[in-house]
Image (cartoon, rainbow, N blue to C red):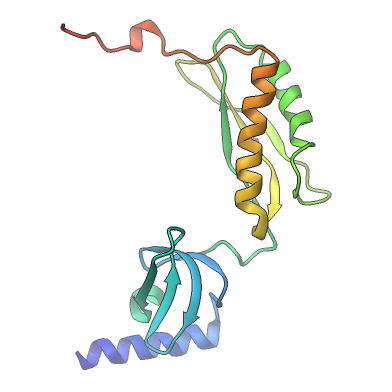
Length: 172
């Protein structure tokens, strides 16, 4: 038990010195994702998005990968727009690029990206990637998703269907 406590204490000292995370940062560390409430000498308190407070031993936290989403001033939102095989890809890209300009709280001078990401059985998949300050991430995420649905729906783009060959057969 003493070795565990000493390990947590030593990791706590390193967390205080190197400061890879701070109170208020949104992180993924030690198997937990959420907002750092407090970095203590033995444990770090992190509140998950569903409002559950987790206490992670500093040795586990410091000994694992730390992903700090708040370390940089802005982030790229990663979304995908699935198109039908019959869709006009160039028109969809143009419409989504224009739609991105209407999404609030993006980083000034850093335009979002819309490009063909990959191809699937249903059709092309477009990457839709606006940039936003970390504090506005979820608002931009949801607003951009809503914009994708609105823009493609109003333009009459067909809903992608699963190809008949891909559908499972039922034995009724």
